[in-house]
Image (cartoon, rainbow, N blue to C red; front, side):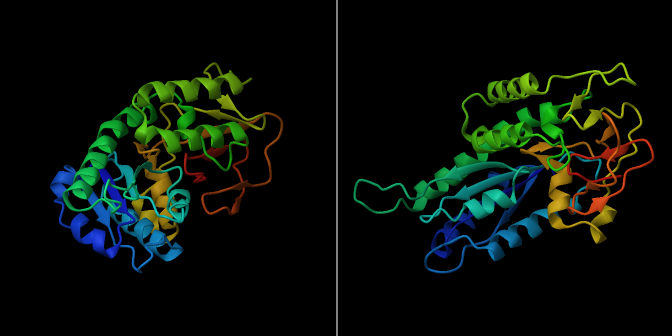
Length: 287
């Protein structure tokens, strides 16, 4: 399995069509997660979104930590905008793309049948074309700002970069160019710098130096940790914007002045650092 494709937001009527599309057509070399939206108004709910997150996490747990895996999100827009619940739940892990079935045909009827099937298949194909370009930038030997931890890198520039990429990547005509543009803008705000105790470039938020662990890849996020990690943690540790994350990836962080007494981990729990530094994964997992 190279990726999990989540197909979300199909009403019961539309889901009859979606469920008949072959998994091998939607996600060759991947897995498909799909459930219908219940109710006549086809509104996204917290319960429905949680069901999708749980099912996606189960798929990821079936793959070895050594195996690169990505999360792709193909979703149908809702008439009331409730899909924002879905998008917030999968941020910044998935690579999302909307399929708009609210577009009216010339007869004033909602598009149906073979057109719906075509749009779903084409959307899945588009995501399959884009996500390897993201992985090319998340599975690199040198540091990528795309993997900085959202809770512990204290700068709005990181959240802004990731949110803009999250909103635009899936539908962009040149995703590689967009990635470069957004990363370059981030680097203009937070240029790579050398910490006082090292010779290799790193990133800093003014509080911590986020340094590469080099060959000392001891910050493993293991599937066996499911008993202490939530489904969200599993997704955050494996995929960022649809790009796969090496399970050994973490930052060796030293303070600019003094270590704080605690840092928020992937559960938002205050976690004490080691004596001289703190190891933080992209998911904010503190080792």
